Length: 240
Image (cartoon, rainbow, N blue to C red; front, top):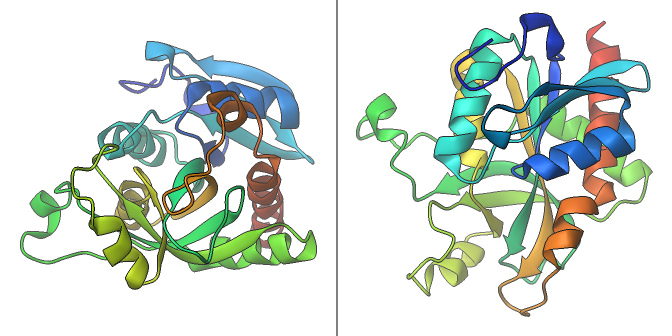
């Protein structure tokens, strides 16, 4: 049991899907996993473990923002020996190259957060995804004809950003979507020499104004869940 996760060491799988919304973690467990067991409800941040095609997988909510995700990802890597975390979340589309319900594989994550300053001082660390996870996920998406795009994400500390020009600036440099967690996840994976990937469904678009409902964001977006689970199955097979 860690400070924020009320689970015994053997209750959490080596592979974790991490949505921000704890209710999405429950939906993943009930919809996709066999024999899911609740291992955590501390602070309402639900976590479940079950199996998918014979591979043990956990689904753990992270909450919103890099400080919250940082707590759960740190404890999973440091205290539960988690091998890989795949963030399965939502993002806002920044570019004409993506549309609502497309799935973005986050190659790297720019950020306006100051969280890494105590680690690196004046050096700007570039948080990036694990190549093997991303390669496998891209293969799965291509084989299943899923609406996948690879590119950069922007992990913002502000949902309501008063800087009205930052989105277009980032889009001009090839950033595809804005979310709030990937940069912290990639940094922690690098710290602990583990694997991490952000798989984000475009839930709304800053250019077109199109958006999905909160219920859709919580309980749909099956494409990214299937992509993440099939990636884990292939990773586990390759590692065994």
